[in-house]
Amino acid sequence: MRAQGPPCAVCGNRVSKAVTRCPWCHRVLCLRCECPNQCWKTQILTDELNQPLRWFYLSFAVDDRFYGAAIVEAPGEAHAIQRTHQLGINPGGEVAIFAVPDGAPLPEAAKNRLLSKSDIETIWPARSILK
Image (tube, rainbow, N blue to C red; front, top):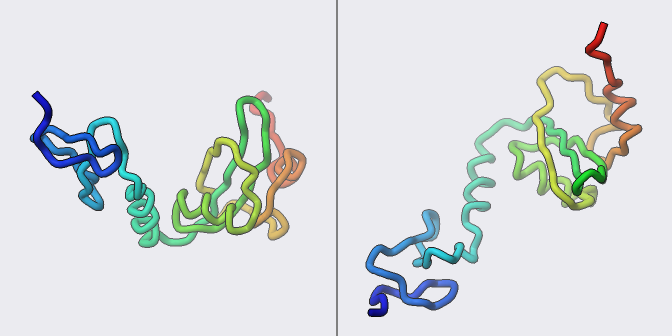
């Protein structure tokens, strides 16, 4: 017997009586589909706006290949990624994001630009943990 519920907002298949809905825009969804509005991204960005501005270090890579890094100021991680796109310094790939500790030295020349491996080594020289 076919499900008699409302149609999924994405694929149009009828869903069962146990309706799944997007938690943000409340569209009806089947179990295989995600909301096309990507509401979760909007919610994350909105929630971050309540946070104070701070500096983030973003490292871009694919597999073992380093594409570069950036240091940008934003209220949160999602905004930091957006900021790299706005500045034209997001080289793509996967990103690892770390909040820069308060009071850490950040040279002005290192902010808001794509940094190479040698730039990073100049800013934060490697220190041996062995004595």
